[in-house]
Length: 445
Ligand code: PLP
Image (cartoon, rainbow, N blue to C red; front, side, top):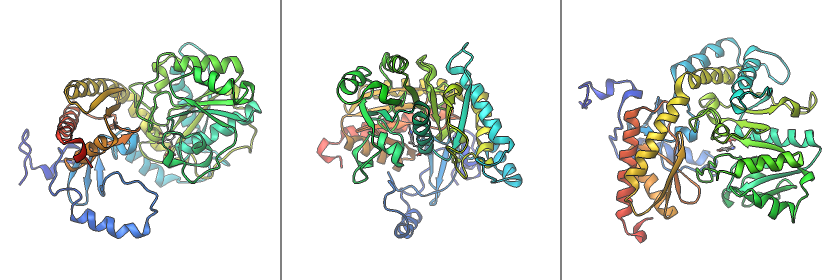
C-alpha cells in the first residue's frame, strides 16, 4: 500500500485533489498508449499534443491519467481551469443549471444568468478606472477567438473605419479575423492566407513602431478602427510590457479616435494576480476581451466595451449558443470564487513561485530569464530544444507545463494552487532544468 509521508493515510484513499504527484508507470503507460493509438485515426491531425497525456479525471490542481499516474497541473488546461479542476461550487452550479435550462438562445430570448453575468462584469470593470463613472456592456461568446471577432466587428461598425493594428508576437485565435491578427508563430498562418484585408502589424512592446512603421508608411491613423493588444503576452512568450508601451498606445488611440482593445483572454480573470492585467498598468482600454478562466473551462468568452462604443444596432451580431445558461452559471460561480480570495492567492502564490523559481534557476546555465505577474510565469531557455526537453521531462516526472514563445515554458497553475504545491512545482521544475542543462546541447533532442 502506498501511504502519505505526512498523514500515514493510504494515498489512493485520499481525494484526488489532495494526492501528491504519483507516477506508477512511466508515462505514457500502456493504457494511454493503447487509447491514443486507437483514437488517432478518427481525430483531426491538426491537434497539437505536446506530450502523450490521456486524462481520466482531474480535481483541484491534480490530474489522473488512464494508467493511474497522478500529475500536478501547472498549466491549468492552458490557463483555463482558474478555480481548479471540477471545483465543487462550479460543478454544482453547472449541474443545478442543467436541470433547469440548458439552452434557449441568448441572442433571441431573455434569461437571468446572461444579464446577471453582464451586470457582474460591468461592476468588476470598475477596477479598470477607479473613480471614473464608466459603464460597460458585454456581448458573450463561446470562445476567445469569437470575442476577438466580435471586437473587430464592433470596432469597424462603430468607427466606420476598416484598418486594424495588431502586434508581432501576439496570439488572438485561429478563426479568420483573429488569425489575421495572430502573429506569434508562422505555423498558425501557413497555407491559410489570404487573411483579412486591412490588418497591419507593429512590434509588440514598441509603441513608436506603430507610428514609424505603420502611420508613416502604410496606413493613415484615421483609417484605423482598433489597436488590438495583449497587455501581457501569452502564447507569444509570457512577456511583460515595457513601462511606456500601453500608456503610449492609449495616447495614440486618443489622438486618432482609435479603439484600444485589450485581449485579456489569457491574462484576465485573476491570472496575473489582479482581476484584469490592465489594472497593473493604469491604462483604461475601450474594449476588453475575456475567455479561458472566466468559466473554469466551460466554453464562454466575453467582449466588453464601454457603452459609448456599443453603437451597433439590433441584429448586427449574435450567436446561437454563446452565453448559454450553463456556461453563465459556471462563470458566475467562478467569479464568486475569484472574488472570494483566488485573485489574492494568485498574487501571493505567484510572487512566491516566481521568486523561488528565479532563485533555484539562477545558477543553471540554460536559463535566460524568469518573469511574470501572479500565476502567469514564463521561463526563458537558451533554445527551443532545451525548453521542449524540460517540458517532456516534467511530464514524465508528474508535472504538467507547456511551452510558449520561441524557447520558453509557461507556468500557469490553477489559482487555487497551495503553498505546498508551489514548492513541488519549484522542486520538480528546477530538477528537470538542472538535468536537461547537464546534457550536451547536441544530445538534447
Ligand atoms: N486571445 C488570447 C490572448 C489567447 O491566449 C487565446 C488562446 O490561447 C485566444 C485569444 C483564443 O482563444 P480560444 O482558443 O478560446 O479561441
